[in-house]
Length: 470
Ligand code: NAD
Image (cartoon, rainbow, N blue to C red):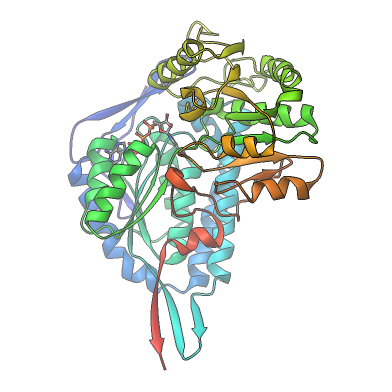
């Protein structure tokens, strides 16, 4: 077991202020693999001060130079892609192929997109007799979750640095090793001291200190709605900017004209990847009553292909959940689904593996819209199949939760699917299996959040306007 020291503050690893430590566990075999320091309010304060000191210089750096720094960071990340993937597999448990392609691949693509946007974004705008300057907001406090441990960091660091902001990151306690590796990559890429800072620690101590720090200008949070609500309230009381990326309960709407087998196959894959620990996962599959039984049979078959195994083995399609706590939470939801009268057609609450935080790939049929498993975010490999009578019924069910993060619509042609998607209360919809686009805005309607990440819309979150009249 490796004991890591220090916080990355002001361009160097500095000793932590306190003596508390966080133990990192490999969720596939339950072994302790490392410890990192648990930061205190003192560490957060030191990091915010370092960021503040770096802010004027970075804000004044020409956008083309900021772009060159981000391009160097992208190149360093690309050169360390395997190490990133192995670190994420070790502490999160996502299968190694997925770690390489998505867990490491997506943040490299996002870093590349912000290297380009920093160079091309119009930081000045003419409106009649005014010139509008788009200026960086200042010091950003970023609090990130464990499910996409590098992507969630880069989705904040990329636009913040492109905009001319400086940042302090407090990563999730379950996945601090990926965050530490990223700090080393930032260092290796030669970014100016203080522009990026990292404090590892637990949410109620280091996270809360960052959210409450008076010298933080913008708090960007990704995680649970419960914590997001508190952070929003704290930011509101201090009249400070806040961006919240919260939970989801997205609908996969399969219209009667769709290619059912394809829609079910992609739908099951969408939920099983990353063991269902994806806020935008389409965890509710909506199928017309005439094709319902056929869809359930197809889903049962596809789910059976997700055999749980060691995530380091390239053949494993389903890894463990991140922690014992998450496994218990997900099993609790599966038991609740059974108690509420839903029918388990694959998986169930039993353990598919003697060690590791595994949950069996689970498919529920006969799920009704008001059941807890159809309303609440489970964050595990669990698909609920719901029945609808007609399109209006499908729309009511799709829009009938407090969330609105993502979704999917399938139909014979894209126009039919698009017409339905226009009526959905959600921030992102994949039409007939559309591909991930790192430039498209990502974020929620309703209680799924406030603000947008990725692309030019994500960059705008880190800017404030100043109007000059002539
Ligand atoms: P969480 O909201 O508790 O943690 C997310 C981040 O917030 C972590 O860095 C954590 O340390 C920090 N945090 C926790 N309490 C804090 C506080 N009082 N002040 C400031 N920061 C604080 O989420 P979790 O426990 O990791 O996961 C619980 C649930 O959250 C999941 O089951 C899932 O439903 C949801 N979740 C959503 C996303 C998403 O991308 N939307 C990601 C991860 C988890």
